[in-house]
Structures are given as structure tokens and as C-alpha cells.
Length: 124
Image (cartoon, rainbow, N blue to C red; front, side, top):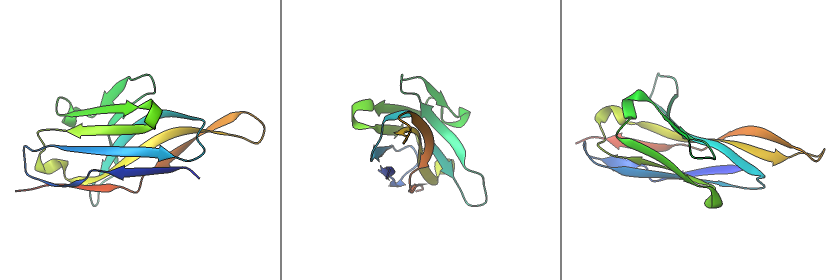
């Protein structure tokens, strides 16, 4: 059973910072790309930032220069450092990961997993 568990959300004032963490656990062969998405009521979930196992990153235009995604492969953990937060960053943030599991045939297959979400509220 694979799980992604997020932590670090909360309430912060505009201009403040938060750091989100997401840990993958279970019978994992390999963790591939990990990322963060966010969603507000009535809107589609959108990509915020992603990082490959080799460290290549991708960011939404709206967070470039303010957010930094990083990972610790040994700990199967991805982080999202969020600085200069704005009210429009308010959303539920979800961790996502592509994870390879061993199959009964002896190979591996990749599956996509989501965390349960953590609320980030930016308000004075």
C-alpha cells in the first residue's frame, strides 16, 4: 500500500512563507517525478511545481521566483518552499508522484498517486 502524506499547510499573512512536505511510503521500487498541485472551489486542479528524480524542475508562471520545489530521494520526500505568499495562493495543495511498483511478472509498472491535500490560506 503506497501513501503520500503531506504536512506544513496553514494560515499565513500576505508576504509570509510556508514550507510543505510530502513523504511517500510503502512497497516502492522507485519514485519518479514528484510534484505539487493546487485547487480552489469551482476550479480545476493546476500544477504548481514538479521535480524529476534527477532534479529537473518545472513551475507554473504564477509562482516562478517565489516558490521552490526540492526533494530528498533517500527520504522519498518532496518539499515546496513558498515565499512572498499572496492571497491568490490560497488553495488546497496536493502532492502527486509517479511511483514504480514491482509486478508479479518480475518487472515494474508506474502508477500515479495523490496525497490527501493540505490547506494553505493567505490572509491578513
